[in-house]
Length: 183
Image (cartoon, rainbow, N blue to C red):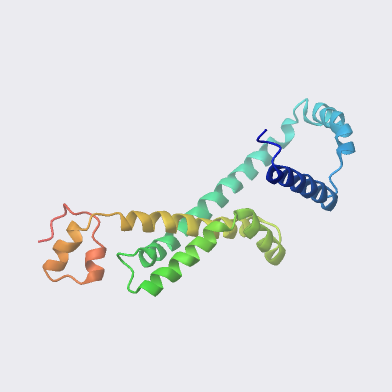
């Protein structure tokens, strides 16, 4: 049979040892699953009947959460636009600058918000401000990458037309509406 080749037996044994070792390191214990019924008692006793006296605090906290997401994303968009022009191959002044900005954007994009959040909570304390910074840094990477790809995929016709009438390379990169009246 195909499954009893030595290679597959070795892979299977390696996975068993890796799972066992990981369970030992993380103190994963199947015996703790016997406490699952306690979770249902907690939900029944603590969540029902609903406590309407805390509704105003919940609404306030929801608005704070929305404000954190909005502010972090808005500031990230403002910061990502210049980065994206410097990271796009067709608008960057030098290939090394392009590579450097792409590396920065990839690094920011690869670190999840929760990691940034943990770092900022340790250094700045609890509150909405560390969350705004975490959302902002991650979204600079995401939005910068997306916008730079849009800039690179833009048609070159309008840029070439502007260069032919004497515009600088930077001026020709900043045209967004090719149908605008240039006279």
